[in-house]
Image (cartoon, rainbow, N blue to C red):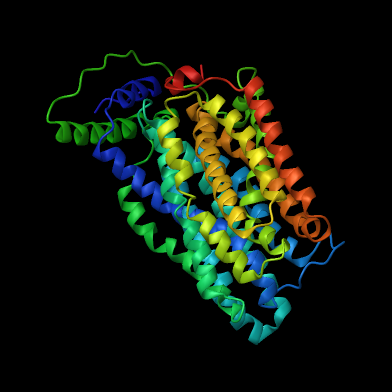
Length: 467
């Protein structure tokens, strides 16, 4: 079997029509992402439930750093380190191993924090149980943060160029079904009258660990990564398996590809993202990530708490949040429809501007029905925005530094998320309108930044985009 160079792998992959192999691969990745999203978004429900269960005290006006803020900041702090370091490591260890290992990490950490809290409290006291919860949320965050990087890189490298944006958006549509599931489970398992079932919310998220063995057997390694890592023989074997699957499905041979091998670039991922070719993109995405998290998670993580601070009971807030979250998968589906029709750059800029207006309107409203409808529309817009930018960021770096580029820049979104979650409870308790000005202002910054400086990417070969 002839060894393949990176450019030969790219030419053979991009000529494949999207078929059953690609759909199966997309489903496997999306299933892993589902547990990632569930664990991430259940935090919004816990922000309402944990004070009711007596795990943390209610935040009072002037409490700028509170136990609830500390709890909410711990997950993104872990995501920062996981994204920054473990995500970068997948440029060295591979996409498949990283995906499986991080799924196992955050599943087991979530299980330990949920199922272990009350036993530890009875044996060692409340302080020990609280430390267990913070440590396991940090570890779960590390797994989730790295997983986000790996999924974007993995899908972008395996899917044909004509559908890669749509594939990333579809994976988000499937994964975002976890959001209404998290919301309705919070309402059922931890109502106001009996909030102590909150630990079950975390335990359910740990079920992703059951799928790791299945994934280990089924998932192929990214042939683009294999070729860039100098493992051209293995890349050739994976590409041939993919080609054989497509030929069996279509019933006809694929057209020949005659591309002269080019040497693989030197594998210095971190240095590559700061080279003259990519330095501008790296700086662009750092600023973008610092801003977009404030706009996105400032609303998505705190939706139920926003409603509670508007005067609704915790049960009412969770019910309204669930109703709004039912529309969560609609946003990525709109991404599937639009992401190859319009330039991703302009979609990101336009959606950011509309979301800024929507969040200000939401902050002004007081009627429960209007809040639920507008909240649902903002959820749709946020998830449409998320699906598009995840596809966009993965296209801006070369294969040998893709996870490093995504991971290093995406990590800064987790840094701003730590600060946001640390201070948001105090901000809401002290002066709620400022929270909506903050999140809307961040989206305005995103619209201006990407509109002026973002490159065009649609349907261009990855190797052309990174040349």
